[in-house]
Length: 413
Ligand code: HAM
Image 1 (spheres, rainbow, N blue to C red):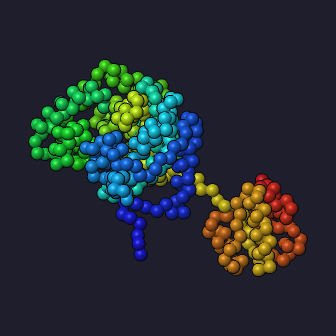
Image 2 (cartoon, rainbow, N blue to C red):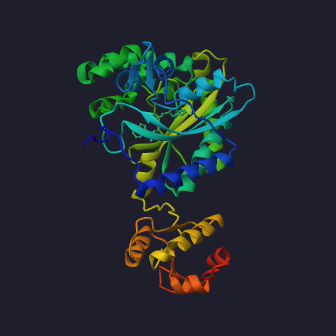
Image 3 (cartoon, protein in one colour):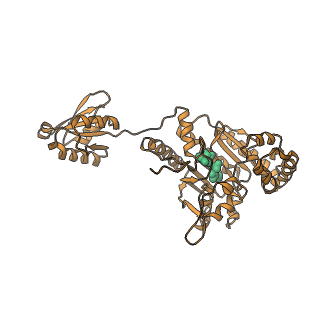
């Protein structure tokens, strides 16, 4: 037997309605905000991720699935969605008309140590807005994220928000942080020691508990913000207040990707981020395009479903409508005709494909959750008068062969 790769999961039929509900909520919310869908390849040139996510991040350093194609080109499975979307937007000149607002639903690949809520393949509903440096861009994006989470049924996920400033204020902050890190000596992990020199901000994202303890006393970016960044952050928070979106300011929130500027945020379920993102004003230029300010988020669908289930949120599961059971072999052809008629009328229907007995057909219909069973035998074929049985309570309804669709629609009304 060959098994599913470590850190990945099959989406099985019993789970599919949850995924469909999440995707439907994502698409419905995107339509409300006039956000259009984009699909980019599952693999890109590895260089794209090195240049965008940052070569001192864990995602690029330790977690990328990299391979060489037959011509020896270095490719990578996407470890996140933003870089590919930015590449496509620049390549296809989609920034001609701004703002450009895009969403995607796609698989993402990170070679992580699998644990609860952390997989090697996960799926994201992501959104990227291109074009505005105004604080209302963040507010619009967060309003969309908030609407999506409400559509799923959440009312309590905590929005944590911070600003990590612009290049100018971050240069001063990094210098102070580097100084602090030199002072703490050997208590931090080997990764943090390396990060301390090349990209000190990254240390604040370390997951090692002893490091996190040390960083509680580290300098705070809020003390190094320039006036513009301070004003921008205040305006984002005021916009959230006006939109009635609750948040908690978290001055230690930095996130694990290098492209962010100013606003960063996460909607969390306990310690686990379900949806995270921020502003990334420098990325388009970094990837060879013209300066285009952007904001975006990625929502982990596996984590979202787990968080919803732990709160008792239910996902709608549409039941099939009519099972047409054959009482005898002579009725099978008529069953197939009835099924075809129902389907033409937009009613989901099925008949036996296995040569099952009538009893076994009823058992199957019950297991599949059919709302009604319509039994066809010799007498029904002669008279054209059919009986529709409601499975929930056994009540029967008269259905005519020629008025089938309307009669099924009206049954029990
Ligand atoms: P991220 O925080 O790395 O951001 O991932 C977004 C979300 O994906 C997380 O909040 C989490 O729910 C989920 N996630 C991440 N890694 C895993 C994993 N190993 N297993 C299960 N779920 C996971 C990004 O990817 C950015 N591209 C978000 C963004 C878009 N920023 C701007 N635009």
